[in-house]
Image 1: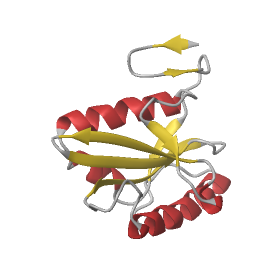
Image 2 (image 1 turned 60 degrees about the vertical axis):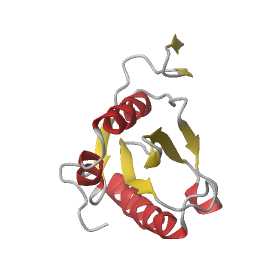
Image 3 (image 1 turned 135 degrees about the vertical axis):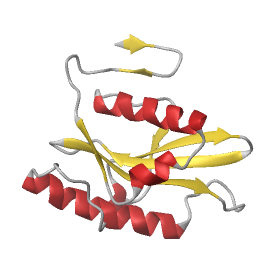
Amino acid sequence: MEISSYGYTPLVPGLRKQLVWMGSTLKDLEALPKQVRHHIGLALDWAQRGGMHLSARPLKGHDLRGVVEIVDDFGGDTFRAAYIARMARAVYVLHVFQKKSTRGIATPSRHLALIRRRLQAARRLDARGNHEARQENA
């Protein structure tokens, strides 16, 4: 096991799954503040190596089993990224966004709907084994 100031998790030696950006997720990440991009990137790196960053937590919902959400607070704002690492071939980044709702900590339903659509697309993509191009239509 590897211990760091960023998280504690069992990592799989030698494992480094491919990262697949679904839809506009890479462009969305690039639009975030540098510190947030770094934090999300670090957490995704842990996911690629079979672990889970301390700022990551499973999303609730029977149809979202395996989806993990990274949460980062910066400058008074909250930023989130959702991914699934429990696929055979890759870690799929499903959604990256700034949470603007002032109603609690729950992920807004419109974001959950997009995560669900992209999750279905990621499952199809993983089953086909074709990861060369990003999924821009999901």
